Length: 152
View (cartoon, rainbow, N blue to C red):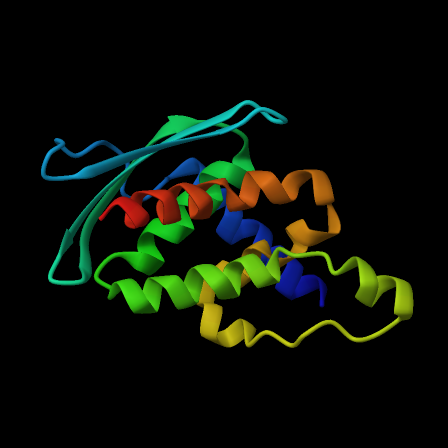
């Protein structure tokens, strides 16, 4: 499992050091949404363009910890070119991955299985759930994206 953990770390570092889809889009026509995580100080601006139910362009700016920046970069590569329905499914799956099920942990039940292969590189962030204080860092971009798409 160590090799897989190393690969996941490398993916996170790569997206942190060389974030994808950086910048801003003029609004209008782009929809602009801002997110803030007071626990870590992460600040994020997401600009999206949606045409005919498809997210055609996304740009991200802001600053924050390595987890929030890597998560936003990974998210932007996954959602670009997808339909709003596909994006909603991906957001729900990612948020499920980031959820610590208290009752499951207390009762010793197995957590719901998530198809990590279907998540692709997003699976690199699965270890964040072991650090509950960092979950908000990983989900900030996803919550901000959902906010932007709700305005679309």
